[in-house]
Length: 342
View 1 (cartoon, helix red, strand yellow):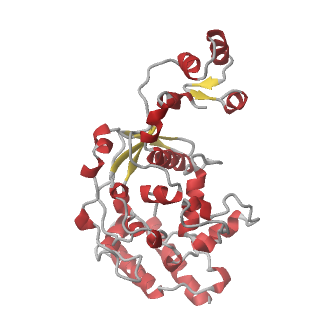
View 2 (cartoon, rainbow, N blue to C red; view 1 turned 180 degrees about the vertical axis):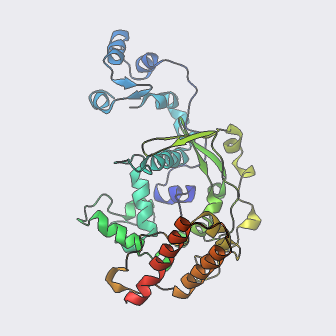
């Protein structure tokens, strides 16, 4: 699952079509301060000399006393043009990048537009018990549906256990199906999206069930030009091709790949999808902890079939080492143990 332009449309209600949110303006930070913030030459010079800036970004402490990031200022030069930018897709690209930063094991905080992320979690995972806003009406963006940033007093450990014990039937794949007739075509755009200097791949064919569609094997992902990922570092660079976004209708998930899911089966997928997924991902993500309250997991037969498939492939691998065998046994133990503990 993942955040899509479809989510942005419904949660935020801001444009996802339009011009890319970036600029190739070559003015210096000093000139931008003078042209857009109305600072005199000497004041702008002193602001830069006081180390209030890093590249084209303004320190928050200086911003609170004065004004915001300078790299967006050229986009605001013509106020009549502001509405033509795709602020929604830019917001999504910015969040994608900061989720990448937060994925590092040494990360202690997260950036990006977290209202979008929090509302998305509330829409898809009701077992986390989000708080509804009693004043919400369907005419409003879905972000207004929730009392965001409300303090629950619940520990991080509890949420980890809830997520570890999450069942597929407890996930709402398509929370907006009752408030729309069709999914906007732009949500099926496939290619790069951009937020100023950040370029991120947008791949809706990996989460088709969130559009009420049958999940099938997706196309190959967009490879970065260069990447460096470590415990502390996350430097990924994707190529920006303006032609993709300027002609998005030529880069959509094909209509013959948009088959509706059968009624009452929102998690449906093609017969070849699960075998494909087992090669590239994990059938079950968790730490092998027993279910909350001793609850037996549903779909145990399906999990056992997965285990048998893992065992069969392991037995057929003549190069299987002790470490790999131990990991396989641990995975099987983690899946089957809750059945006998209840």
